[in-house]
Every structure is written in C-alpha cells, then in structure tokens.
Image: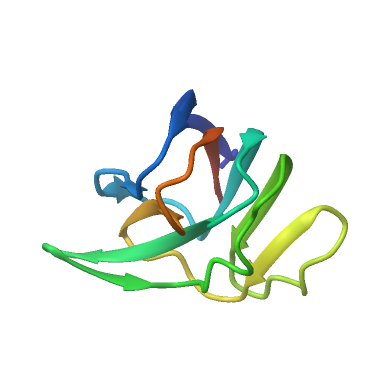
Length: 123
C-alpha cells in the first residue's frame, strides 16, 4: 500500500483555530502533517494536533509542540515506532493512527498567520 498525500487547507490568512472534519484512516498506520507558514505575526503562534475522533468528542494524540511564531515548513508525525523528531520533523509521536481522526491547527491568539496544511497517510 502506498502513502496518500492530500491537501487539507489551501494557503490563506487565518486568525482562529481551525479543525478538519473527521478523516478515515482505517487502512493506514500513521500520518505526516505539513504546516507551511508563509506569513507570521510573531505572536500567539500555531500548533498542529492530530486528534482521535470519537463521535463528537476528540482526544489529542500529540501535544502540537512549541507554538510556531515564524515562517517555514514544519512536519508533524504520528506513527508506530516513530523516531524522535529530527531531520526536518518538528514533532514525532510513536502511536497508531486511529480509524477516525481530525487535524486541528490551534491559533494562540487572534493574530494573523498565512499557512497551508497538507497531510500524508502512511501504510
């Protein structure tokens, strides 16, 4: 089975927390999320969380790391036996991807950040 890369959020300026609808991950063991920030206010920051979807409830699978306050590409990985974050991976968590999950980008305050989010489901 090959990985599947998908776009979640096109590049746009945002000031509030955004969460995707539930995503079906039944055929996959993990996920890699790409946050590409092209304009940053430098305050508040952004955190990316992968969350297990349990009906209307959500449970964080990762912490989101330290808030991102600058521009650049950050990679988040949730995968069984994931190695420590290194070589371009900002945060890595060793755990199985649940059958349903969502991706949340948490805004630390109301300041504007321009960013896009893509993700890759991993076999």
